Image (cartoon, rainbow over all chains, first blue to last red; front, side, top):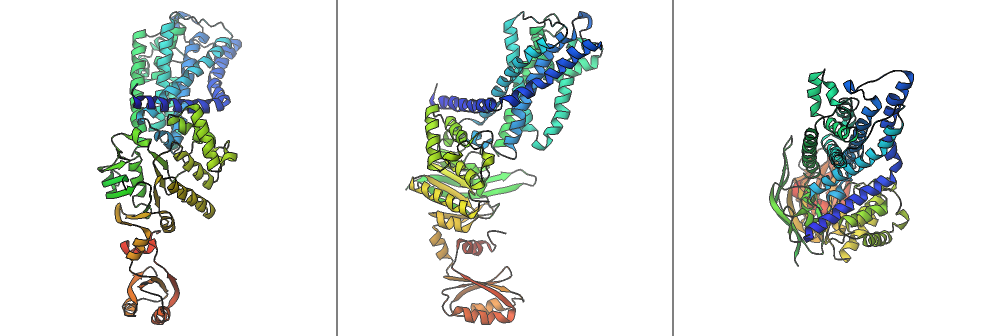
Amino acid sequence: MTEPRRQYARAFGGLMLRDTRVLVRNFAPFVTRTVMNPLLSVFVFAYVFPKIGQGMRGGGASGANFATILVPGLIAVAMVFQGIAAVALPLSMELGATREIEDRVLAPIPNWLVAVEKIVFGGIQGVVAGLAVFPLVYLVPATPVDVHVESWPLLIVVIALASLASGALGLALGTIVRPQHIGLMFAIVVVPMTFLGCVYYPWAALGPIRWLQIGVLVNPLVYMSEGLRAALTPGLPHMPAALFLLALTLAVLALSFAGVVAFRRRTID
Amino acid sequence: MTAAIRIEGLVKEYAGPPPVRALGGVDLEVMKGEVFGLLGPNGAGKTTTVGVCTTRVLPTAGRATVEGIDVVADPPRLRRSIGVVSQYNTLDRACTVRENLYYHCRYFGMTGAESAARADELLAQFQLTDRARSLPTQLSGGLAQRVQVARAIAHRPAVLFLDEPTAGLDPQSRLALWDLIEGMRDRGITVLLTTHYMDEADRLSDRVAIIDAGRVLVCDTPAALKRQVGAETVLELKLAGNADGLAETLARIPGVREAVPAEGGIRVMAASGEGLLPRVVEAAAPHGLRDVAVSEPTLETVFIQLTGKALRD
């Protein structure tokens, strides 16, 4: 490595260490915000509903139980939530009123690498969140969950791409959305993304509503859910791997680009 | 002496709306090891000038180098040579005081052990050791500013930029920070200080540039700037009545160099105060004289003479 590159690597490492320290200090809130949504979702939909006889079936012709459908979807949602809670919300504050991003922007490292560090660290938190959620969605349901990994490489690639996409989404939202509009962002971005992200139903099951099936393809969460479905519950209908891998790669690139550009605009006049 | 900061024809325009020309061709040269004051009212272009020199503002035209490094060409390299204290508290709220120092050192490539040692050294040097585990939100304005200065010099920069460092501080914290800034000079660190307090610029700076509306008006030592006023005494007259013809009357009094209308009255510049006051009071009495302030020229007088307005509007 040339000397500047070694210095960039060290500064990047310093930024990662700082974020790790903050994560460790806030571990309890981190776990709480990570597990609450999937825990309650899986508890109500896959434990309470079957017990009280209120069926929810999204498996279509495959006959898979709803708990199995939920596993990949809820993991995907947990990852996306990390991108927003771990990257977008703090960043919006650090770029806004407190300007505390300044010391990191003034680190001896190119501006875009400070933004990329946010994506990478958000991605790591996404992976941790996915791992924390897995036992919940596996163990809580009243009906047995049918999870098996056919291809570990596929699972690893999907998790890597999905977590980077979450981090990049967090960077883009945190830099583009003004702090005063963060509440609105939940209403117009996060909620529709989740409900229309093929979390509670496989994409193929949307067949009868063709316009919706096409429309949700702009939602990156669809490809995370479908990718995890292909990797964890291959028995369920899912998109072809080539399609969701391509779409996730494009989402990572597009969101990262938008986020890095917006980050630069927010930090350099 | 060689230049630590060289600024040539610096222009910065913001697209707006409305479009703003923040810098209209600034030229400056700050020598190595000097404390240089940039004095001007709010909106004069001080923060923009510092922003360009610290890689946070891209110039529209012109050129700036710090320690011989072009600020646009290689920002990461330049940042190794500079320390920055901005007018806001930009301490990392999620980290303790010690961690603010520690991680800053890590960003600048020090190892864990080096960073820990440097953080502890700075805590002791800035009398912050008992605050090491406090969060920035628990600090008073003066303490937070002290931590910001400690953090800014943690990587041993050659040039320190202080943007309005004492704005909003209580008088005691202000004096404490002045001592710190004087300490920088003793350590050979070049300091560029922006301020709208003329006493601050006067007391701390080896040289001062007065800036207004994006242009440098004058640049010299505080003593030379005050001499340039051409008067030893300044009398500020406040009048209840109108000042018609008074300026001309006053200007004819022996020893008076200049008498000009000022806010609420007239300003008289005179060679010496000896025997002058009774004659001035006598002349001004019919115009409803209600207050006279006698002082030596200050940097504010220089600013008023140059721009016809006060530093703090």
